[in-house]
Length: 164
Image 1 (cartoon, rainbow, N blue to C red):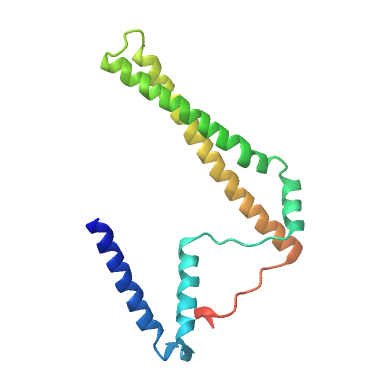
Image 2 (cartoon, helix red, strand yellow; image 1 turned 180 degrees about the vertical axis):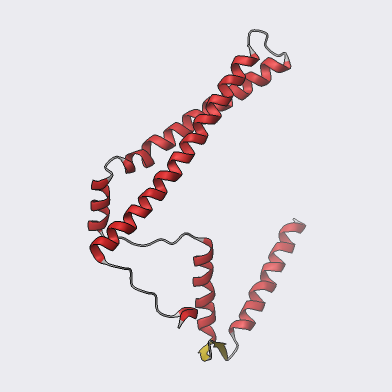
């Protein structure tokens, strides 16, 4: 309870400090005076850029063209990799519990060496599925960029911000 109260108090002080900063008459950015509201918009936009990947909206034509060049990629990303990771994770959990039971002496009908082999195979399948998923996601984003450049040209530059 004390931790919750302390957290709320710290949040209140942070909001008050940001409000005081926001009420400043003008902010000097790259030699141009700007209203204080611009600082808040600038900060939110910069935080989004720093903590999220660059996401670009693509037209339906670009998406369909990219899908036609790699027809099964979306099915692999949506169905195959998640189901493989989920199934191997369940098998890994079973292998770990069987290994613990065999090594702990709780069950004498288990062979720990076989369960350890299963554990490593399951971990390998999970690692491979994650690696291939990341590779497919990267290839999809690169292909979307390539098709967008081919069909629509370079993306428009964003106006505003610090690059003015």
